[in-house]
Image 1: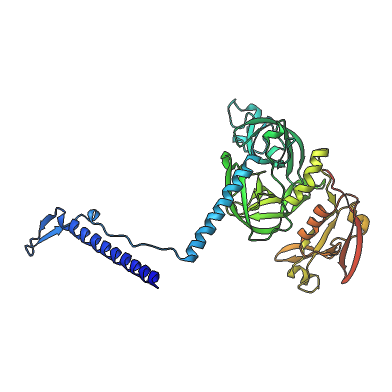
Image 2 (image 1 turned 135 degrees about the vertical axis):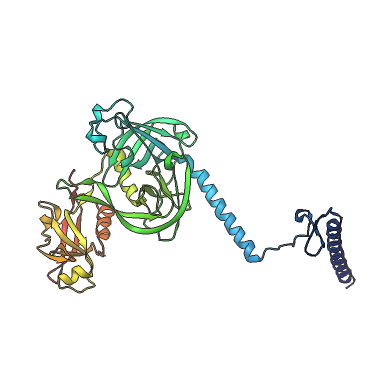
Length: 433
């Protein structure tokens, strides 16, 4: 009891001293203000004198702010998030490279030349008369010098230089390219102990809203890091490759992100918070040529399938079903006298002598006008593949690209003339362009 009483007295004394100290500070402030030299102004209206005190010289005791438990928790959360990003960057950035390419070809037909001039006739030094230069990003895939990037970064290159995070440069050779997935592999001759690799993650388990990180070289600014979220899944991008008839192949299961991606980021890694590569940054949706909030990345699931084949053979054989089609919607279903909620992929065209033609799939056989445009209808509607539902084209394409190989036989669930049936199709290799 005596100790408790003394403790209370001590606390009271501390409080009294604190109050006196505050009072003393207040008195001191007042005294300082009174002692300041005042400038006087004479008011002609009432002949009074006003003292003007410089505000900067008047001090007051700041109020002591104490963070609430929730504020402390939030600060700790922010600090932990910051530490995670810093640690991730320091660990992964050494594996990210800047890729510089030179294209010596004189075929500049993709460029608009003044007055229809021929590139060979242009004077030396003209932007279109000599070699073309470009750059992108990539990441070290293995300790034996293999680096993953985009096909559109290195596919046409005559020379390739890799610049590492520490500024070290190395010449690279092209190992293989795959226009169908826009992936490529190059190789550098660098000792294994000087290479930092980054692991591939699981893109199949991604969910919209997950945090992602992009590291690359936008606009040549090496080692740039941006962050965002997965803003969409299951997107489809047109591939560079086309069939002999001119139809363009598509890349399925594309990851959409709002992490800032700009020219020069192509080929660089899209990472989860564990620092694993869950995608390869490939394209942006833009009207101005720079990032507008929508970026696209080829999923790591595709990387895991394509890259080993490129390293082993320099090329990839993609399984092919041999159709062109479109997704069903309410207008299309009603035009075909089907339930307005019918979904699936309408087979518009079956490629002659292709896998689907050999299996007996049927394409559209009539045409209607919808909103002033001719639209093919009729034909089979694919509603399933190997027991999995097909609601949109990406469901069909991603299963074929990521779950099958050339020579495999798949089972398509097809709706034909109102009746459902199972049709086996043996997959073949996509024909060369």
